[in-house]
Image 1 (cartoon, helix red, strand yellow):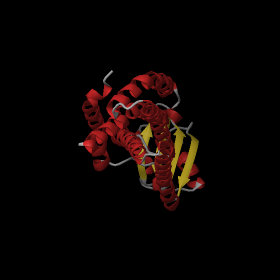
Image 2 (tube, helix red, strand yellow; image 1 turned 60 degrees about the vertical axis):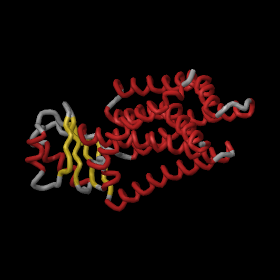
Image 3 (tube, helix red, strand yellow; image 1 turned 180 degrees about the vertical axis):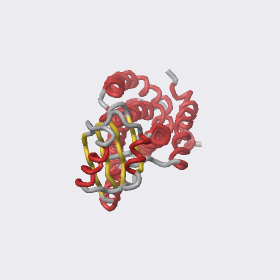
Image 4 (cartoon, one colour; image 1 turned 45 degrees about the horizontal axis):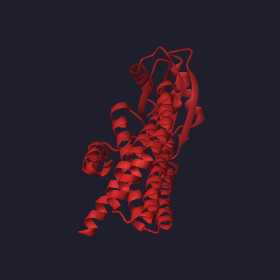
Length: 283
């Protein structure tokens, strides 16, 4: 099948998904958690009071950055607090609901938050560089490594853009688990990309056909395997996103986005870019 006949359609689909996310990142940015900004995060079991009642009670004493409320819990993001201050907040809330109880309390100083952000960014850059060097060495061709990195960048931008939109409209926070999801997305992306690139290399050693023809054949021979492998992961993540607990839902959604984009980019971004570059280079 002539998959690459539609490569510009694949590029258009990528741009259609990338551009809203890039615009959101530029306009709204991400919604970082206290792990990056510094501050305290309190999750409190509380049923009856409304968010407005809680804000009216606590705002005169504490600086509230955000308040999320569902049927039985509230999540407060505030300036850094001590354990005694967190206990005092729970005591104050008991005037509204006698059954109020602290579920979890996390406090991170601003300097620690900055260090975590730097380390997270460093981890992503190291992973990308190591991937580039490994593929370039394995395939004895820097071009293969370069386009594998482009596909990884494509997937990372889609995930970050999606989380920017989700953070702006639905309050999703970017925390260390999302960094884990980004690194996992890189592995999704590069795994399938290497499978296709390796098949291209094998075919190249057996025939003198053009890279265009070899790439079409390589995609045809590997796409079923890639889809079967990826759909197994996607269905599992979809089940967790729909049925799993709130504590892992956002992380699971990030992994789900990464698994879908990684599956798409390995076949319909990395290979078309490689073939397009080869076509331009030969002119």
